[in-house]
Length: 287
Image (tube, rainbow, N blue to C red):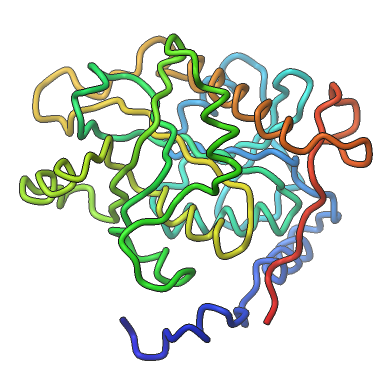
């Protein structure tokens, strides 16, 4: 560990803050201060976003104040949702997540392609609700003290488990190995994580859960298990429409479960939504 990363470091506010970046991006792009949708999606593969665009369901969200990415919007069961495609890897995912919450996001879902680590769930494709993630990446170490794993919040865990009880949904629960280096998934590393019962390997969840824990944000990650690390030909098949339809079903169920956690007459997802409610945005932790 770098010497200055004491406990005090993790409680210290950053000089470079996401709301300051949002301010400058809005100034340079001549954008107003309209916030992003309350529910946002990270789509590292980009397949969900491509499908929505191809079907005419999505539009570019011109108010997204980010220098690095584009956000598109679509409606799901009357709720406007923002989606940012192709933010791959822990550092990029958390950079975008910080900006999303600074711009008004209240609930973030990540659905990322993942490699199968356990054959107990059957052949791919299927989804894993990520309950915990092994921190084999760098970003989580800037948000939390050293540790092997980081977990989904207990409140979200219970809510999401209830939402995906039906085995027909093909959404299972388990842990993942989050890595920064997919082409260093060696046999010895794979064997180590298999012994710990890891379900899949991916590139974002540990960092996103560390961010969520440190910032007290609502974030849930799903692994879309689509491959067996290309050991054999015919890998990386997600199914019809590259799995976008099934991914949207997962998003729909997750949003409904999250909204049910926060029912109150004072707050709502957006104007014109169908009775689904959300909590007010909490400020970042200060010291």
